[in-house]
Image (cartoon, rainbow, N blue to C red):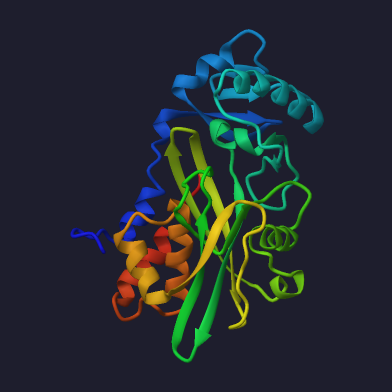
Length: 288
């Protein structure tokens, strides 16, 4: 049942753009902006043995090259892990301002929000068309994962070092939904979304690279790596109502579904052109 006081799509987008940068201090690596650390964590950057130097411009990570900076930071972060600040994931992210740049630093994914560096990810919307009706395959997040039980995009995953976007998409689709590479190759890159969210883990100035894939009627995605509990085939009308009126989706996945609904004209009736254009702009927040 839908809630009695429905919120708007704009509210869903605002939920992912709640950061106040006055709560954070910028830090750099190799002379390039790298991330943001919350004020209440700055004492850790100032502590004896921390690999940072402080100046009027903020904090800078010590080290003369990518390898040296990355190693120093990793050893220091292990201390934060022992103190329970976060957990390492074993997946390595490049620290860059834009995709394709040479990284100034490599960092474990688990530390990304704590350090406030820019993460990037691939998000796939798998859909089925029957006449004028469009249905989407929604992933239900597995128990034990963050946002357990929430609706996710069909497939989604962070962008690690060493893979192209397409290679990562193929990997994630195989791992999460048992999709063959030959099918994933047909996915179409559609849009890039950005948001700046603050939560208990830190800052997420995030970039989502979105893809659409029209799936055969007889294809059913199957969970494989434990990230997803099950997949649901949901009519786009129901999806639109759920995204707008219920907190059922993982927050950033709501943005991807809103973008999908806009691009496929599925909100043309409920919303005016001005409202749709405003939503599209809001899905692309400036990154700090």
